[in-house]
Length: 150
Image 1: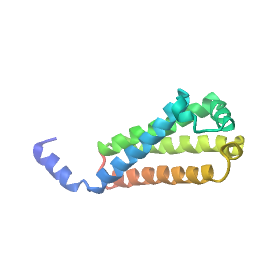
Image 2: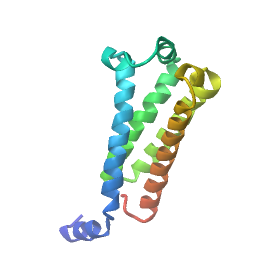
Image 3: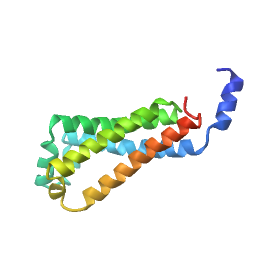
């Protein structure tokens, strides 16, 4: 692209993409940190959970751990791609959202996640994650349709 075309593109890139992209990256980084610290069983982090909760986390089947990884790392990669204004962010954020749904189906339908986690908070927090993930996908798709993402 020529310098002139880059300048035109910069002028048409809405500022909110930076705000949304940075907030999305921070949100996703928290999820990735939770995933890593749980997978490596980082004691200072995991000591906040009850033995029943730890048994629940450590008993995830490999396919759930894989879906969880795709969900959180897809969120990180999708957020970075959004900040880079790449159209691929749409697909990655969609895959991340679907992986989050798969993980939630296991945690709250196929297993005793609500009981193990002790109440309604995990359901509420999962609903928030669901809404944020879906919102990021919809936002990225809207930016792609508007021509903001290459």
